[in-house]
Image (cartoon, rainbow, N blue to C red; front, top):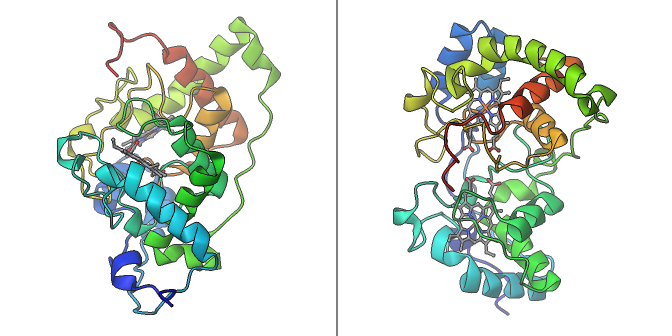
Length: 287
Ligand code: HEC
Ligand code: HEC
């Protein structure tokens, strides 16, 4: 009884393109000569057609617990339907995620794929500093696990094996990262690449105010501000966190994956450059 769910509430009905502002990114990329990446953006923009099928959650007790936790702690921002339209949403500059498109920024998995359960837990336990996404590590582990499973019910993407993938491989940090002198040499090399590829969005100084920054939007149709790389990074501040973002990209945003654009050496050079920007902002970054 009551086990068959109405997909009008819990399934996503929106059809999906991976990144909404594809034309913008393509234009920026082609301007930069990155035709290969530009074309792969196009290939990823598949439409997911809405199907109306009834869905039975495999573990109904967990589902119910997750629903309860979500209503208590998450719906005020993410909305009861998971559409990102909670009561607080209009007041927030960085909007709460709409979970119905099944696109997630914070992942260890390749571009276009769903996050792992651990990725979701990391976001919910640790929050995302600089956004309204708070720290929920005060919740019992069981509630945390239930609520992240519940988040998966908002999009049917989770039910298809092809949308899942194991985390990308991040090579061990190179030994030179520990030596200030070597690190500066590699940062210089990274700077060359940065000015060619990244500065159009992130700005020559990494402040996030590059020439194309103002017009960028994300797939949820919100303005997309390139990150200010001079301060705390929402994806994490460790060298491997920066490397990971270059590998995975942030789904739904103009920050695409550069996994195939650079060699591992070039990626570590870019990491060294991004690390060298830290603290170069004239005044402390506002939270
Ligand atoms: C006060 C508002 C607020 C509350 C409450 C809140 N969130 Fe969020 N959440 C946000 C915002 C804003 C973002 C977008 C952060 C970003 O884009 O960097 C977000 C992002 C997320 C993400 C990351 C999505 C991605 O793209 O990777 C997950 C997962 C998430 N929230 C889950 C939850 C869960 C589960 C709860 C309840 C336990 C919750 N949130 C409560 C505001 C909130
Ligand atoms: C087409 C524009 C664009 C280009 C080109 C681009 N980025 Fe980004 N980048 C963004 C945007 C927009 C975000 C923020 C996305 C969000 O959080 O919604 C971002 C986020 C990031 C982040 C995560 C910051 C955080 O706070 O977690 C890093 C690191 C990063 N970019 C580095 C780079 C590097 C290095 C390059 C060059 C190889 C690059 N980006 C090229 C637009 C771009």
